[in-house]
Length: 194
Length: 271
Image 1 (cartoon, rainbow over the protein chains, first blue to last red):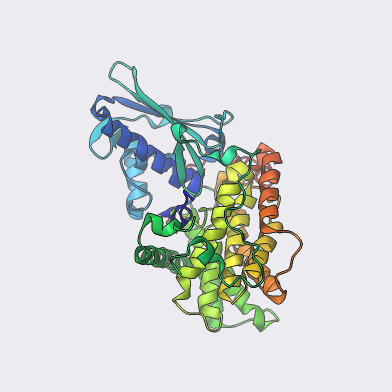
Image 2 (tube, rainbow over the protein chains, first blue to last red):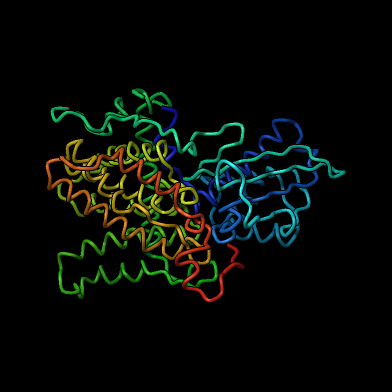
């Protein structure tokens, strides 16, 4: 089973796992990827587009602040709560953002963070597109992520079968055991722990 | 399957991490119980947990039935967590933020109000809830944008009900029954947050979800585990109902309470 109890219970920030925690993880993942590819310094501008439910209720669900913090390399688990509001205000007012905490570029909150209120990407209603642009406006890297619920983010390359509505998985846990079955539910799934 | 958690990390580390998660949940309850004020976002919704906490500590008016004061404590725990969530505080997904108050409220209820409860039970409670939550995540969805609130509050309620039934000595059949009852009566629940904020109806709904989880656990424990609808069937039903639900009820703030309460939609909200 490729899923852990710690995929369900994760320390993060409010108000929404799918609209705050997931986008923050995705934004952070995007700049970490740019860094790993050795192209973070080539990035002169970043645009972020939110689709579907993220576009519709992202503003009220804290998506913009989450994306700004994620692009700066903060994680939902470790970000200092009291630092969030002042830093987000700073980024908006100064019009610049520090990617991964080190590479400072201009950031126009109104134009670089776009909420598509009625457009949805295929696969899942919580789609995000991150695009890194070079000095002359060319696309350096572009990635699509989906916030699939509970703070988990998936890249387009790693689609999970969550939306494969027509082919449900069989329950991995045979909860309906004979009456004589002595083990408890937790030990059926996590046998070595209890 | 067999080596699920220990395939990721040693058993001792799993236990340690589970206890750390509970520490964060419990701290969140405490923080919510002592913080007053208005929640951010523009709706001007007042926090209620701190005042309720003071009322309950005073043990004043029991509203006609003292035995139900415990219910008010459960309500308090859930309100506290979700007010903290609405304010952007430190939260543990369980399985989501929007439904993050239910599991801590029910676990806190168990630890504080149930006879024989011990701190050692925390890990097993979270693992049982996790076992049930994984079924929802794999076989349906825990995303309100995908299946509505039934996938968030419904899943959390089901997880908490099953975990409580187990903690109170239920058989696996009774645990399954508790989890099934809890989801069965959340089927069709829409996600229609007013102003696109995770406040109304989300905060109160967590209190209702926690109470419902306790009720489901007790209903299952009063029976012998035999029941008509299986947990697998109800999970499948939640998935199908979510698939057929109109988009306006899936965390888009375009239907339900989101359009019937405010005269002007709060579309300018930023938090």
